[in-house]
Amino acid sequence: MKRLFKNANIITHEGDILYHQDVLVEHGLITKVGSQLEAEAEIEDCTGKFLAPGFCAMHVHSPMNIFKGIAEDVHIDEWFNEEIWPYESKMTEEDIYWGAKLACAEMLNNGITVFADHYFKSDVIAKACIECGIKADIAYTIFGFGGNCDEELKLAESFVKEFKDHPLINGRMGPHSPYLCSKEVLKKIVEKAKELECGIHIHVSETDRQVKESKEKYDGQTPFAVLAECGGFEVPCIVGHGLWVEEEDLKYYNETTCTAISPKTYLKLGMGKGQLWKYGSQMNLVSGNDGCASSNSIDVLEQIRLFALLGKWEDQAKQYTLREMWKILMNGHRYLNFNSGKIEAGYSADFNLFDLSLCSTSPNYNPLAAILYSVQPAAHITDTIVCGKFVKKDGKMLLDEKEISQQASRCAKEIYVRGKGKSELHF
Ligand SMILES: [Zn+2]
Image (cartoon, rainbow, N blue to C red; front, side):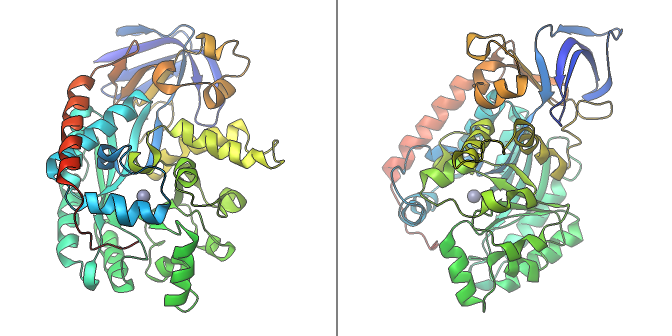
């Protein structure tokens, strides 16, 4: 199957604009990019549109989409301990499936072609992702209660092996955090990741209290230092949040480590500003989300828009430039194994088409400014392509959104009736 996307204005992963370009896609791959290409192919006229690599959401808990709006106007401690975890303790496989599907539908509608998930029941999530046609790097969450993770590790291993070389799914290890997993557990998980040649995805230094308690418990070590001692940075590592990073933590970063940021969550749950803005340029930032239980939407543009605005807020208007913010939106691809993120021959055909001619994005002096500060992705992204296949075309989602929202709402009602359970977890 060949498709020729004609006369598009390409926005590269670096933020450069290449006008009037054609993109040839064959068997899910971009095979040629240039002006006035000729090919025997189905023609997609992109005149006037902007074509850019798909967005990445690099820290998501997709099934938690089912909890959107269930715990509002609370601080993070209460949110975790008294609301979300008690509900999660009674979650069923069906809730996970429909919650994940709800997330996939929303992400695709917002131009997210790939995401990094962190949750248990990874096989159920993978099924939902494959059915929706979105790419997902799924970290199998491991808690290691009571210092024992053998059973969880076995399940994680078989998940990673099952999806090795799958075009849409990649598995990795998901130790929950240095505050829930003991050092022994973290070391075992890292050893397994090395053996399986996969990465890890973990929450690190989300709150100032986590950092304080880690220092008390481990003789002055920050959560980053604990993870480093356990080998966590010797494998590809997605750090969730890192909001309260300290200067001494920066030395652990290398080219396979990135930090997925979710400013909307930090604002909403009163988590403070941390040191992310101070040290972010040394932390390989990528766009995160944290899922809808805290963020209420999976929209990475909104997250990075907030990051830029908060950065500019206190007399730093010249910093947090359009190009830097665009790179944060694009960089996630570099830390995943899907051969995506560039509009160049040899890369997977995972991209979006933007219509920036709507009133809300006109006039268009600067396409990056339009996208970063004016676009509403569900409205301005008219087409989304993953592995060469349309998942959204001419402004319409190709999956059955109505069915998904109805099923998810049914599960949500049941969750509410079932009520909260006892959670063994404490944040
Ligand atoms: Zn998280």
